[in-house]
Length: 281
Ligand code: NAD
Image 1: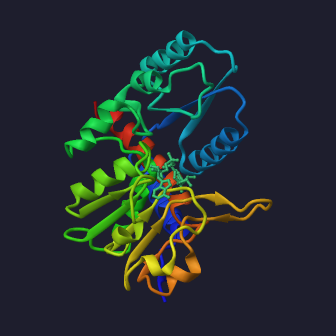
Image 2 (image 1 turned 180 degrees about the vertical axis):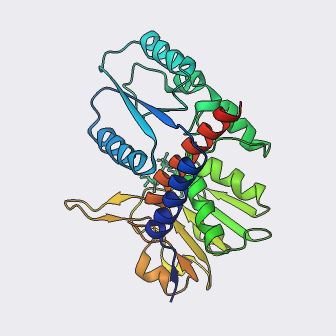
Image 3 (image 1 turned 90 degrees about the vertical axis):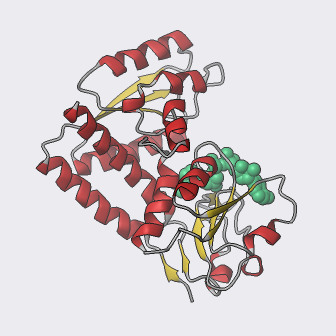
């Protein structure tokens, strides 16, 4: 039976460490969150982030813009926040209304305040294994592996999914840690052929219980990024058939209580790091 990688517990520990760091080093982290429009899910995410900030001692400022905000208005706000010395981190909540170009918006955020790691400068730095702000979910995945002493170097890591915010940065992080990385996606033929090779398997697809026991080898370490709502209920499940895969895995993350809490925790870590860098500059 697999050992559970407890993201909730680990998050609690790291958030405590961050809180101490903010106090001891007399940091003044301040996050500006920009939301355009009325996306209900975004509002919930922001509320969770605001609570996490509050617990750690990160000041939090919300900028709620109306749905019909123009691109110029959004960019003006981002530029104003870039210049504001009190603001040490900027987060632009996605999705944006369709008439706005999110790529340009991310490009406009000062890379030093880009705590989500979505500015192409940070993406490029990650690519060349330079110091960078990195997307929080993949960071959380690596942190979990490290905290549970899962060796990455020389291991075969199979990543399912190649999105810009999860799959692609994760591939790079694993590569930087000397894993042999196999990338699979929606056009991959015979997925099982690859998943069976994995020493470390990370699934970020968005399909409930898609990965079953017969698709993995004995002793695999499984990280389930997927968040899927079971139709007609409030129950959330991952991409992995937890019960089935647990029988073969050596380690596994639950959903909920795995990668989810770690994502917000890594955002907090990035915000504290940005504040530290701004203090030292
Ligand atoms: P996305 O839709 O942008 O990407 C999904 C990826 O899965 C694509 O690259 C696609 O090629 C691949 N894919 C789809 N069907 C596949 C199949 N049958 N076989 C192999 N690959 C397939 O999604 P995303 O933003 O990367 O998120 C993926 C999942 O992770 C979602 O369930 C999302 O809710 C969840 N997520 C969780 C967190 C967290 O904090 N835990 C954060 C971000 C995303």
